[in-house]
Length: 433
Ligand code: UGA
Image (tube, rainbow, N blue to C red; front, side):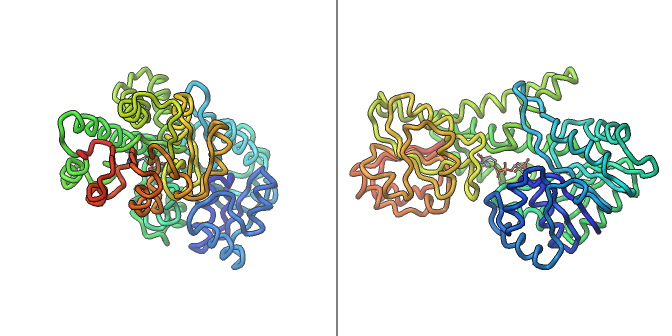
């Protein structure tokens, strides 16, 4: 199948590369010429394990192409995926301008019958709106097109794995033929396919992310209660998760969810609900709980030390989660800014997000290239991301570098037995220490 993918951001690039890997001829289009040049030289503009190798391989095998020209990229495409960004407007609604620009470019260029697939996360009803835009702007009256909504459920850091071993593929379309075509394209993935209407598919994406965010805020609230009642959240989550109806995943308590998806999509769904005159009280609480949760380590440190003025604090992990250099909505943005405002001296370490973090964190922060240097003579440590090198760091080095280490672990990722053996003062989230 000849496929074009518009947008080489996270979703578009992973989608395009994986579709090439299963045998399709894919052209990825992006208006950013610098990005296209980088990709043509076999380099990935984003950090994602395994992605660059697949780019190089599929380019070499002639199935993957990159262009910044719509006419070159869309010519003879049988299927066009739209995977441009839908960032938040100031009021939390999704900004659909890139999507509409892509729709107009498609309307201008298509010269044969085509199926148009939205991968981007879009408000319910957007598929219908794009259809109207393309119909209105179509330059060639003799071509026809069908719309499909095919939301993605990839996690950053494991996107390639999620594409090949995902739980489901959702194909929303009002056209049986178009849905069958997208089903055919996806067959080599051997993942269960569920076909719905376009609007249901659009809703499945928001509802799934909002539900996962709800699970996280729920377990975080339970962890706060565990602290007050001397129960242990690790045991509680494990015991709850053994019930198949609850499920063991997304019950890790910590400093709240971040990233480019949950915060944006929960806010957008609040707006969507509001526009439909529905007061989504539960989701409002999920968002509020998450904001509060980002402050818990700083509050614990303030209770422990009285004031943070002049304290040297080593912050380990800045990305919103491991295996990514993405700093969008990372808890570290709130935490580190608060620490600096409170007069602390912050030395920060992250295996790969430092370049991105430097642009976003206060200029007073000192960035170090290894954990040892970051914790040297620190009064306390804040763990914000559970990178393997942070989880597996030799705990004895905390003692030798800091004297009497005090650790605030926002991800509950350190081994409690060893911590107790070494008599390290340890504060985590909802665990009895
Ligand atoms: C999330 C969803 O998991 C994907 O299914 C979805 O496709 C994607 O958003 C998207 O809409 O594009 P992602 O944001 O990459 O993926 O990352 P997650 O692994 O879901 O983690 C999100 C945040 O939740 C992180 O800050 C993580 O630390 C936090 N989290 C996750 C917890 O605090 N506790 C948990 O138990 C799980």
